[in-house]
Image 1 (cartoon, rainbow, N blue to C red):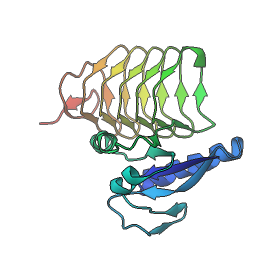
Image 2 (cartoon, one colour; image 1 turned 30 degrees about the vertical axis):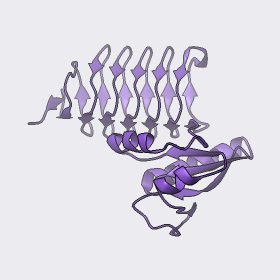
Image 3 (cartoon, rainbow, N blue to C red; image 1 turned 45 degrees about the horizontal axis):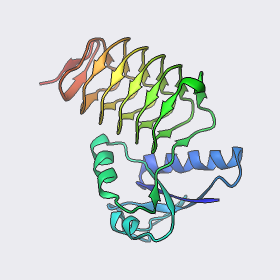
Length: 213
């Protein structure tokens, strides 16, 4: 059984702990969840899923192999934490809920450190980078490319052939239509529909999604 800790003891961290539990029910003894790391919560704080063990300094001081899942909803914070973890004993597995539907796993390309929550559907010829969070019921259709450190909230849908860069946040039930290119550091509001290319960072809301000034 592999030791696993979750960075982030908030809501996303607890949801990730639930996914880990579901994985272990499907494939017993896959993970031993030892607790959480979080620089915003005091070490020793108890949660329903395990104690807070410390922060980044404690991760970097680990002397034994430890898998870490980064469960933070803010893409910029995910990116920063990734850069701050420098310990060679740390690995970053993909944490994938057993209900995830890979329609054609043979054509899937996926990096490391991704978290896929219940009900996600991944179509054919999809490329997923590193450290992405796909919350419940996210759908990536054919030929979608997803960069790294993106955070897609529940019900997000990305249509075929669309490319998302890095550190993007898509709010609840937002979507992007087909064959678009979306830059880096873009925030899409809840329920918004992106219907044209986005070339600059910022907050986009509405239908069709427009940049807020």
